[in-house]
Length: 67
Image (cartoon, rainbow, N blue to C red; front, side, top):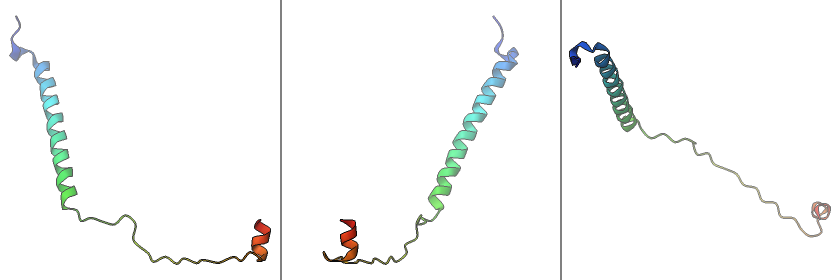
């Protein structure tokens, strides 16, 4: 049987997996903390709107051309 300490590539793979896991956990923690501290921002600022309504009579020329 081979000795586990002589298998350096196994330790290298385990170290790489551990470092990737550690980086992922720390990045998600940093992202969560930054999102929590940020103030809510309105995506679309509210602007006053003007609405114009034009009544069309039945004897109007615009109504007769549409119909």
